[in-house]
Length: 103
Figure 1 (cartoon, rainbow, N blue to C red):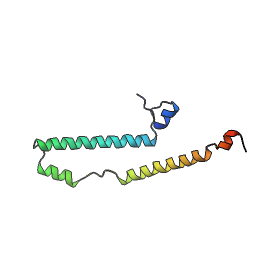
Figure 2 (figure 1 turned 30 degrees about the vertical axis):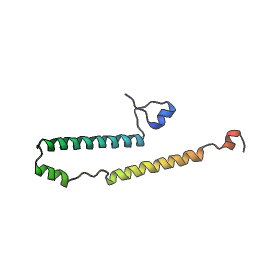
Figure 3 (figure 1 turned 60 degrees about the vertical axis):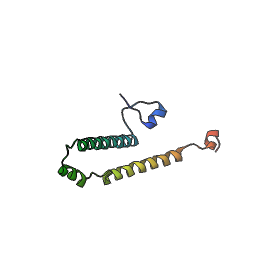
Figure 4 (figure 1 turned 180 degrees about the vertical axis):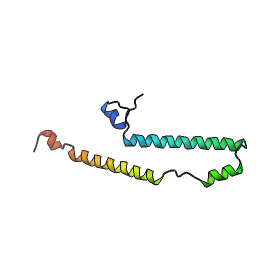
């Protein structure tokens, strides 16, 4: 099933490729889903007395950062590319004078 990106929806094109923003959104959604499933599984295991104190201490003492430095660099790169693209589009956008044929 081909998914369409935000920009492609307005243009009516279909492609399995995602732009960087779409990939970031999908990755964040997947991460959030995995964290929720992990939390639910841990709560269930605790409720049934399956998890030992040692395992619980190991989980608490070795947290996984929600956002890594690499993630921040990637996000900043996407934002910079988006800002550059917006600046180019704004620069190349026709003015009212151009549309009316004025010089």
